[in-house]
Structures are given as C-alpha cells and as structure tokens.
Image 1 (spheres, rainbow, N blue to C red):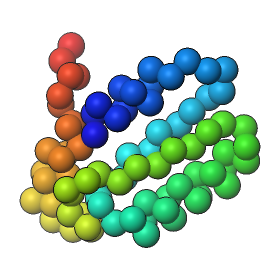
Image 2 (image 1 turned 60 degrees about the vertical axis):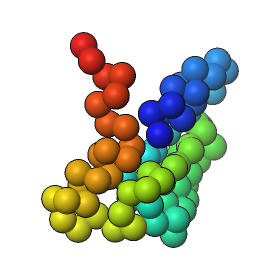
Image 3 (image 1 turned 90 degrees about the horizontal axis):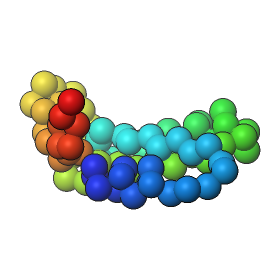
Image 4 (image 1 turned 180 degrees about the vertical axis):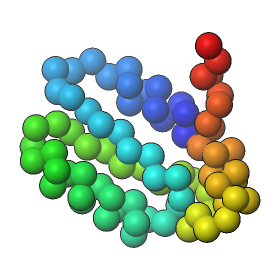
Length: 80
C-alpha cells in the first residue's frame, strides 16, 4: 500500500490530488467514502480512495487496528 502512495504522490500535474486510504478492506465503505469526498471536492481537485488489501473488512477491535496498520505499510519508509 505504501508503494501505491509513493506512485500516486510522484505524479507531476497541475491538479491537486487527495489520496484517501480506507484502513479496512470493505469495498462498499471505500466507495461511500470516495463518493462523499468527490461531492465535497466539487471538481476542484481529484479524489482517489483505496481500501487496504488484506485488512479486516471492518475495524472493531485493537487487533483489527493493528492488522490494518501492518497491511497498509504504516511505518515503512517513514523514518525521520
């Protein structure tokens, strides 16, 4: 997932882009998040929303949070 972020961030264009990473893997929720963000953006900037592959479908427990963080790559490449 972190690699997808780097590819997204490395694109050079004159349009502002927002990448939303849904920490769970439910495609329906990801779609709803993207629809709401696109409505907010109102065509002023591009919105891309991605689910976290391999993460729990819903995040309900601390264990789910930890699994989502591991699957998303949180912490990789983020050293000061």
